[in-house]
Image (cartoon, rainbow, N blue to C red; front, top):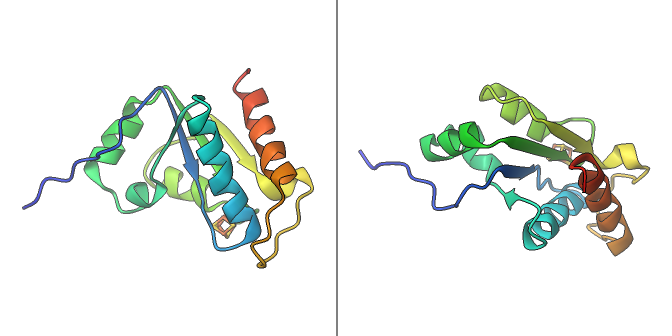
Length: 125
Ligand code: SF4
């Protein structure tokens, strides 16, 4: 059997985006990338948590903070994490920030910044 190992390097703050198939899902993805690039945490692999990949599960257990970002009230990120036994420390939903969900994938930089800023405030930054 092949050993399941995560190639990602965990940090104390792990950021899980839903990366869904809508504008808000992709705003989430861009937000997670921004936070990672700016050094506020490590964008992590939600699909691996859903797949119960042991390396990612263990790395997530070691995280001091788990940030869950969802595009809409379906809360896929939060549900996947909870299904694996994790409770997000921070949970932000894009549509709660007066950003409408649609499927045209047109993203406004200001919307990505709005979500990024909301998470930074919750992180105390
Ligand atoms: S939370 Fe909403 S946008 Fe994100 S994956 Fe689920 S249904 Fe799609």
